[in-house]
Image: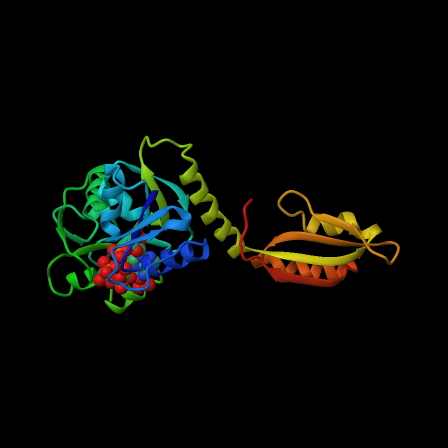
Length: 282
Ligand SMILES: Nc1ncnc2c1ncn2[C@@H]1O[C@H](COP(=O)(O)OP(=O)(O)OP(=O)(O)O)[C@@H](O)[C@H]1O
Ligand SMILES: O=P(O)(O)OC[C@H]1O[C@H](OP(=O)(O)OP(=O)(O)O)[C@H](O)[C@@H]1O
Ligand SMILES: [Mg+2]
């Protein structure tokens, strides 16, 4: 059985479980369930704190896990990311009250509050800055108002939490993060069970970001139409009963579908349809 760590709460949990469900795996129904066996797919899911997942995976007790790139880096665990999942995207940034500092070069002697001590300590060392770090579990934005620190380092998605606390982000982003699949460094790369799991998740990613496009076009316009819809390998072309016309079928990036439909119409294509892809193996 493949043993997989899944975030049990927080920003990663819901999207991770939704993606696994979409990939055909059973997921827990109750938030108190700690372990779920999916015998049909020969997988065992362990619902763990997101921050602990890299540690379990690096210990070798679990084969793979879903966590945030920032949490993996912060843990210092001996694990590596093997697939990007495209949700829980964020940047990790310093922030302060306007006028306190412009970037790490001004931090000497200051105190920085964060939940990600590992990332911040490594970044300060690299920048040659001598500052103190105070560890907080969350709601880090409040630390400056309450006098615990002059600077914070935290996850920023929309920037709303920073703005609401009257803070401005300073310096370059320390890192960008998203949900990732991780495995222990040095674990075999050709484990067929892991490969199958990754293919299923990749299938979900493709199904979410592509649509299937069908249209009819005149043979003399085919080359220009195919240039607009080259597909992944190459489009399928079928003859139509109406002479001089063909039917074309091709996968298209969902976010470009409307523009491509307009361009195909201009070219003379007709009966242009898009349909959702529910699952896929590339
Ligand atoms: N608002 C957000 N938008 C996108 N990603 C986020 C957001 N907040 C946290 N994350 C990401 O979620 C992961 C942190 O998970 P964790 O569950 O510890 O955070 P959380 O949602 O703040 O939960 P908690 O506050 O209960 O600890 C990190 O990878 C982080 O980048
Ligand atoms: O830029 P934003 O869109 O505002 O999102 C970022 C905020 O979201 C998360 O906080 P969460 O709500 O999980 O609370 P926490 O700070 O207690 O972890 C994160 O820690 C930031 O505070
Ligand atoms: Mg949080």
